[in-house]
Length: 172
Image (cartoon, rainbow, N blue to C red):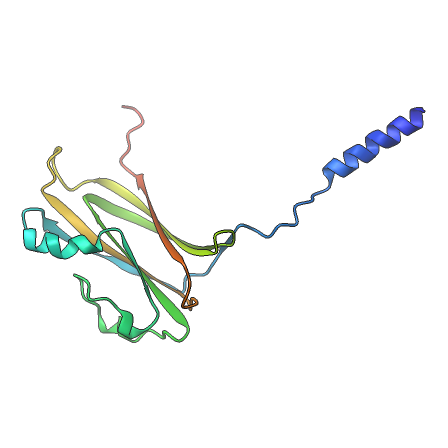
């Protein structure tokens, strides 16, 4: 009986120690072929014409699979964007309107295998505010861009951005 108890305990430990996790990973990191420098334009909030021109671009993501799909945005595009090899690449663009100074940027591109989505995560390191006090007099529109391997035409792309404040004072 003593040996039977030891065998049952050993078998129980063996069974619980086995990894039954044969599931595929929920996210898979994907390559970024090229990261472009962000484009930034600072403008006065009192400039109602420019403010109205930029408003449709706030928090907007664009998937570009051909040079004909390059949007007519407030920045315009250099000729090099039109020379991208769209046969093998997809250009992803993201627009954000904000009032902070961006001092660092980290891009991550991954596929969510559960939701069947492609995800571009933009993590910004910020340093302070361009406005004095609580009154927002100025804002910045930024365009972020990366070049990734060609995505399927029906790809569901999600755009994410996060902030990390480099000026945070933990001693306060």
